Length: 111
Length: 113
Image 1 (cartoon, chains in turn blue, cyan):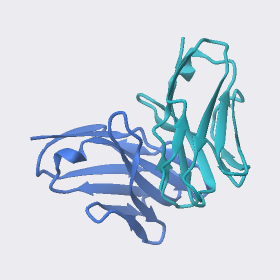
Image 2 (cartoon, chains in turn yellow, brown):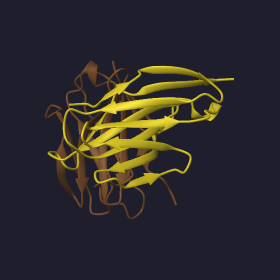
Image 3 (cartoon, rainbow over the protein chains, first blue to last red):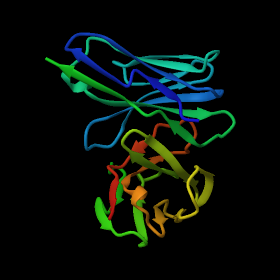
């Protein structure tokens, strides 16, 4: 029931780009993206809604393919501060107010 | 404005004991949800409350329970603790709980010995 995230881990050099994917087997109403740094609370990055609406930070971009129930988070020109674990959270049409989070993608940006 | 506050931040219990964790949401937020975070499993949904009503519950045994008070503060309780309950328990609040941004607390780290 958890969405599947890929890759599980990625190491980048500053300035490189990365894509993190999130895939669900169920029809989704929305996909959320959060970043968690070690020892800290997860922080909101982006919401993508069924129908195309998006809400989030300006420097973060993402897509939501409703036909495939897949979302991708695009991190461009990565900075050291991008390091952390990225989680996608999904709201399914059949279960409403229940979030299903992926197991996370560990992103490390090195100088 | 103040963020989501969880207490206690750290606690150690022994098997068979029970524990109560507290979460104070952001002022004005009416939805509070709870998650268990363990290495390799990510965040597992426990339950979600809105205006004192539990709207949804995850796949956890009945030993896990919660409630929400009229001021939106929430508590979760775990009875008859097992070693596998050791985890970081995160609370998140949002205005309405539906397609809204979640604001997480820093969590309560429970260790069961």
